[in-house]
Image 1 (cartoon, rainbow, N blue to C red):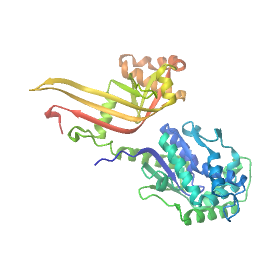
Image 2: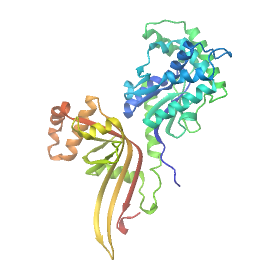
Image 3: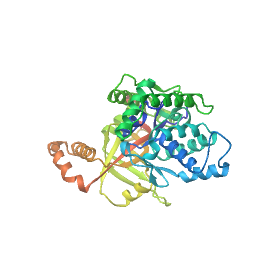
Image 4: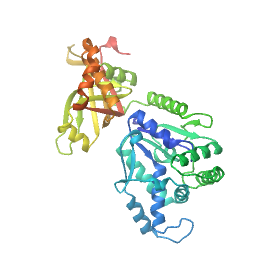
Length: 397
């Protein structure tokens, strides 16, 4: 067995109006990772193609070269995490012009084109290679990220989806006829479900959530429960050469929980690696550490957020006919993000103070308040975990 653990990607698929965008942002906020709104990508591209005079219903419009130029003009990128995630086109956040019903229908029309879907697949996968993501759309779990560790499929009745869309439009200062919205949703469903390339359907291993009679908090709770269960069930990592020394996910979590210090390894882009010992705390599946707001480490992480973090414990050098060492170790490969939310920063600083100075835990809150403005806090989101141990024979098992 040599497979890797699934990528740190959560997919949320479903038809128009099922509540994907709102819930994806909320889930990403909870996990502390970016949110990818793929519907916004299709809508943005559709408007670019309209400006170029492209008509997907007939042979008129730009040819293959012009189509590729429209692809290149989008230049999609991503910034921020959670609900603050933003899709950028040519370095600028996409605007409200993509949120009209007309833009949605235009997106559905171009989404059936094989060239468009291939471009989007490559672009979205490239973003997934760069970031852990909550990705919402219509084929995220089936085509774009089949290796995602957790896949959600949201559904709801047409009437409920139309009512939700009407509320969104009214909140944006626009009004519409609910019967017209309902008819457009039906048309969109037919387009999405009947297209030859990547039709809308749940992934075989997706958790299906019917949101018709559920409020947003209940749906969110169901998704987070599925995420936690998927994370607990995920394989640990690449199988190592000495399988007799490989430890399972529970042993890895235990070691990270009680480990005293770790080593953060970074790649600064030169021929010399950079590693630094750190105090840390494990909280809600992520590793947190604090440091000065500037310095070599901070500069490297801003350029390249891929990191490796290692913890070693239970070391015991022995001589039993030969020299050896009993030990346990855990290794995290993932991405590191600055914590910008003050409440989260404060919580982490309190946890660090309580871990390293338990005798003075009553002063942890005061310390956190005092250090908040002059201390940077970072979150490592694991993508691969592995554990290894050599123990006394009586401890094996």
